[in-house]
Length: 483
Ligand code: NAD
Image: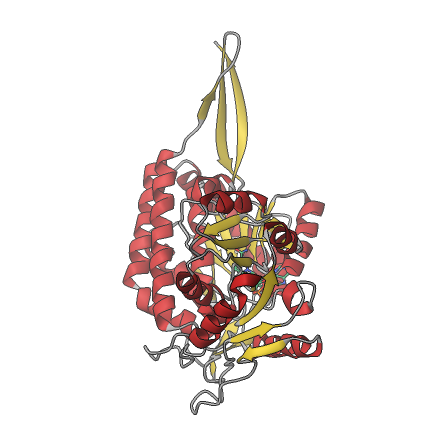
């Protein structure tokens, strides 16, 4: 990439390019120290990246590559990720503060994603469709060409693998624009892909700010499809640009997921999952179960179990193996969480746990915030309505199934939900009634690469993962052939 005196470079057409005129800082949120500087891609760089990706996508070497050969490259990328898993995990940890074990697990899952799509690439082909008369009717699937992939900072490795692997398997060239908060895992993925034999230009990685580099990329006339994961406001702006350009946009956006506990549930098991659902990654997860609905008859018992368990979460430096929760990914994000907690107090909420920064020595310079549990709010309160993206759980009581469904669905978001009950009939009824793209029953945050992922309502459009996740990056072509 480059020496530490000049900003780190980005990747265009197999070459590392630095921009000393325009760069930005990467800050370690656990210590507040600057990690290094990185180059911002200018409008000319965006243009160069798009030109090179368009040429590489149209090159017969890639365009006509047999799926088997493309799958081999994806397998080699997976092997490269495993080989460099520690480096990838460390970059993610020092940029977004996730604890080491979680970063390692996400590196492993990124490799598994590439392997999965290597398999899909080899097995998913064209379809012969039933037709009347003496002709053959076929549906073939072709890549869009140049895909702009734009990712957030909360789980860069996972999100980036989830876009790159299927988009490449589908035969596209991809320009990846990672978040300015966590740019480095993407750069290393670019290096690994080149080493794995991906032709130059098939994966370009541009670092820079969203309002400049990201926006220029989406607006560029040479980009044929956008795949975005991030906040709903940004997604809406990108969707508007894509609509004006009449190109498809896949949008994976925010959430305010209801996690529901009926009084017949196994409360102990529920508590463990509620913890992971909201406090893992310091609550910076799109599927965070941030609205906890508890049936009134179980409310007092569950809340006391929860407060006791969450009070034992070890908040600490991300590289300390004893730490269960690291800092927020940035100081800006912590400021945002603090404002939300203040709004909860102003709206009559009762802070049952946390609500402040930890006092432990050694954490004072980082963007740490304690696991926080708030009761006494209404489902329409700011903290229960807006995505906080922090370790803040709002506990809300409900009376019965009808009341619960009305409250849970009273949200502009619809990404995920969780249900705890021992009645399978009720689990089924509630799962069908909830307006969310994912429902977990007696578990939470269980994810599989083969199950489509995405949200209802303002949580997005399009589905990543699974076989659908590869079709997302292809356009169908109906071919009718008279026999
Ligand atoms: P963000 O929307 O601020 O930024 C996401 C990416 O978009 C970054 O790379 C940023 O540089 C870029 N960007 C910003 N403005 C842009 C513009 N005008 N044009 C083009 N690109 C632009 O989101 P964030 O703060 O990085 O991430 C947090 C959000 O992501 C949360 O809302 C979270 O719920 C969401 N998220 C959703 C999923 C999902 O799968 N549904 C997964 C993870 C995160």
